[in-house]
Image 1 (spheres, helix red, strand yellow):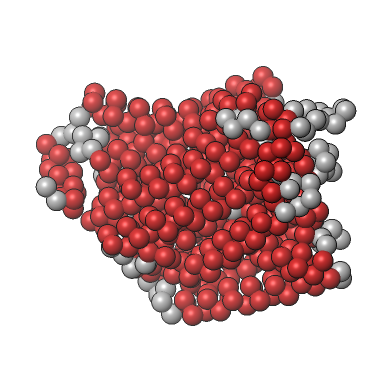
Image 2: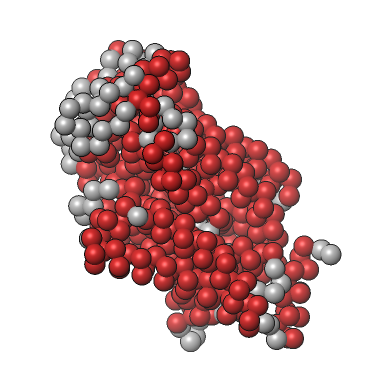
Length: 517
């Protein structure tokens, strides 16, 4: 093995041992379903804030989004990071964290499908939500595998990518199955610290590269950049330095909306608010989580914006998904400090991916084991059997997503955008309106879920029949944003025409009593 590989393997061994240790010490604290799924609603500010941030940003953000948008848009891509921090994090915490905690505690809801069932008194909605989560979060998690596999493939070119993906799957399954949400909250705290330290060091190193020359040099060098002859996607310096994205302004706006407002309807994100222990922790968590997202989000897209300079305008073999892995090898391949930093960055990206993966797995497994199967069994399921089922479905979901990730699906950004848009497009309307309005009906909430699903499904079908699925995947941001907007509009609209019965109004008023007068 080369020196960089030795350092990387050593760092990964230390990290793996730490994750397994956390899983072991968390096992005794996750003996019931409440503890396993939401940490007994007793998770503190730092752990919840870092859990939210690390779930938000996986290796796909660096490899896919930052690589693609930094390469094609330039400096303007940093607005995606800003939007994620302000809209996807700060505004989400301010608007939803406290109301979600109070209402889900009042309803004794532990998952998004459980919330829909108890808020709208609808078993059918619970079943539909559970199916959507399980089906569409598989490609989401597969995108996480593929993003990380691309990076490890760059450092270890002689090791098949599927080997790394299997290692990630096994490690995630071990500590998640052992410790549940408590284990993930502890690991997220550790992973968050690693991510912040790694991104700060990487930004400094990238900006000091001779091809970049600091912030001033980045602007100056990008402004004079000229595409290479025969470049399939020629971009000039004026485009790369346009603060509003230039000709990509519309595309940039849709990506900001999808990746920012999308968090408002994703069950793996909203679930963090179920578990936080009190209002004081929410106030602290809002600040901590926003700071985390500013550092990670803006840092990732800033690094991506330097890619054309560092790589000399030559798109690497492997296409757009290989931009960031190639950039890292170029920047960190020289000297002992570069080798050490490379090992740290690999652990950073492993942390980012595993934190996202564990949240998606727990959300999906609980959707089937806790929300779906008990409804299909007339005799019900004992609590201890439900715990075992949840752990088994965690393993099953990891296996399914690993198998999906090994398939030859090249564009991980489109893969993740598609899943993100479908799930959030279905849930955002019923979830948000259910928190704030007593007038929302079961029919309105059902219409919101179906409208999101139909919007993305019909658009995908029409575009695929006309131009192929690749063309539909490329339009995934627009489809996702449309689905979210339609869901938010259709829920109160249908509710206005249906109305609640007097008994339903009384039930809803009792639920909203959790907020006081």
